[in-house]
Image 1: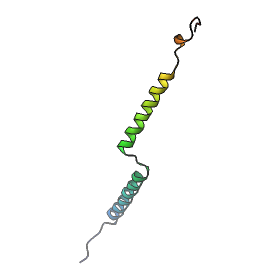
Image 2 (image 1 turned 90 degrees about the vertical axis):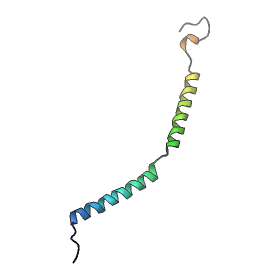
Image 3 (image 1 turned 45 degrees about the vertical axis):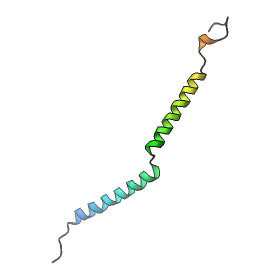
Image 4 (image 1 turned 60 degrees about the vertical axis):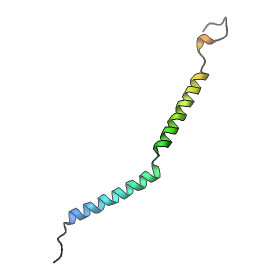
Length: 67
């Protein structure tokens, strides 16, 4: 005798599998490794530190000049 199949469950399982495979493709296409995120965060920190070092303070202006 044939096995009884609930068509709603079959349909839902098939859709879930499709969503899982699409999610895997998106992770591969758009995802970034933890190493890449750490590297970029370090570069942003370095750039901010360098910019702060180049900023002029108003009280550090030429002598005799008031801010």
